[in-house]
Every structure is written in structure tokens, then in C-alpha cells.
Image 1 (tube, rainbow, N blue to C red):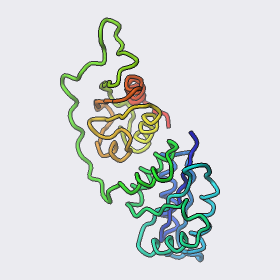
Image 2: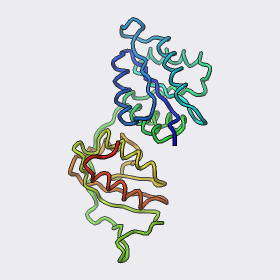
Image 3: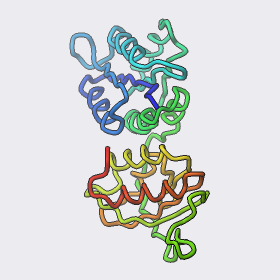
Length: 245
């Protein structure tokens, strides 16, 4: 599925806007990002012309039904500039300004854009991000997990609607940042709802908040037509030292 959503990051600082784009692009390598930071003469502030040019470029980078641009900002006056640009846009219906935490919103929403979600879906993810995420300890894996294996075959039925497995995380950085994004992207290829230690397997921020480190054991569960295949593939990815990006 092709990417349908691009991002414009608007900040008072040119360096900050570029940095957020660089970070989010690590999670979503096929998603277009455009930075619009600072004034025209390089000072701290925002520029109507820069935002307008960035928005036009981003709109031209995506096409098709449900396509468009998500715009994220850092502070109040940047928001005012963005709202003025959108009001004058020839395609305001293809633009969503989302008032959310800039970095967290960009990371979480860009991963969904990478999966081919529509503009409305991606904007909804960005809007759902809390301003501050507090890390919580990873719950202990169940001492007696329900086994995948049934019968003597050693394999769960291919049509199973529920499956689970434990996996030991091999990546040196644990389940953080890029590994979490890779997990979400892989989970999104299956017809199943996935959770890790009870956290939403479709949310990069929820997975990162678990604080899972290298060597930790996590419990994966999936519900849906592809549950068994999803659990097997995701467990294999977590137990591989170099997870695909």
C-alpha cells in the first residue's frame, strides 16, 4: 500500500523543525517530511512564506483517495501562521492541522502514515497523543502463559483467531524508537490486533513507554484472522538482533 500522507513540521527554530523531521523519518522512511522553521532571514520565529511553500510541496508529494498533509507546530504563534496558510490554501480539505505534542505526535502518526493509513486516520493518531508520556515498568510475563501449541503437531491451527507467545528481546536498545516502529509496521501487515505486555502493538509510543530492555521477555498476544502468523513473525523479529527497519 502506498503512502498517502505527508507531514509539515512548523517550528520557531529551523534546527528544531529539521530535527523532528529527521527523527520521524527514521520511523517512517517512505513518508515525505518538510520542515518550515525560523524566519526568512534565519532568526527565531515563523514565516508565512516558508509554511506556504512547505505545504504546497507536501501536497504535491502525495496523491490518491484519502491523501493529504498533517501539519504540526511547536508554539502558539506558529499555530496562528499555519491557520492563516491553510485558510488561503487551494486544497484546505486535504490539510489537517493537529494541536498535539510535536515530537510524540510526529513519531506516532508518521508510523501509521508509513502503513498507508488515510489522512483522517493519521491525524486521529496524532491528536490522540498525550503531551507527556510517563514511562511505566514492563509488567511481568505470565508465569503460566497459554501455549500456542495444540495437539501433537507443535503448531497452532492456521485459522486460529487468537494466539500468544513469549519472546526475549534481542535488540541492544530494547523495544525503543526504531525497533518499536519496526514492530508496529510489521504488526500492521497482519489482519489482527496485537498487544505486547498489554500495550497496544499498533502504537510506537505505547511500546516505548513499556521500557523494555535487551534481554527482557515480553508477552505477545494477537486477535484476528492472522493471529497465529502475526505472533510468530513478531516474536521472530524481536528475537533477532537486527530488526528490519
